[in-house]
Length: 179
Image 1: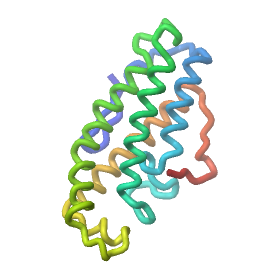
Image 2: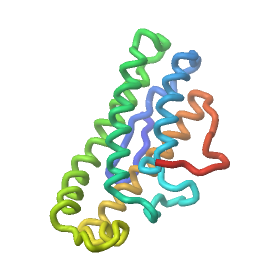
Image 3: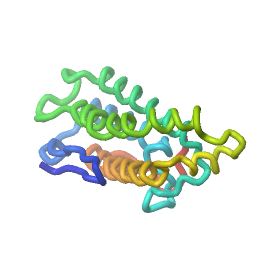
């Protein structure tokens, strides 16, 4: 089955290959997911950064908050678009992709990095340093950034798949994303 792989993250995309007809409900569900992804810099990085490794100007605790907020929003999208409302001819529901994204990508990333980084930030980081300099003192900073860059690259790949499979507008074609 086709999948996106970036670093230790992978996402199964098998059902996109067999989809022939897309209903408006399918497109709306995909659009909501796409919108949540493309409007969060924590998920996609800076538009002009092809490697997704430029974290300049980001306070990592706020970006971690954004990832966690996306997790809640994605779960909400799954609830708003139950399987009975979306096209019945799909062998897999878009909700399966959302679940796979949360279980195989977001949750492992957050479990690995959020608690450790926040604990360090709250108890060991030098509070006299400005936040941008302080976060770079985190002992696992380079590993965190490498893992996060892979997550962002995977999310960019997923955005391309969603745009193609559901005929969505490329909202980033000429602008910057935020949050």
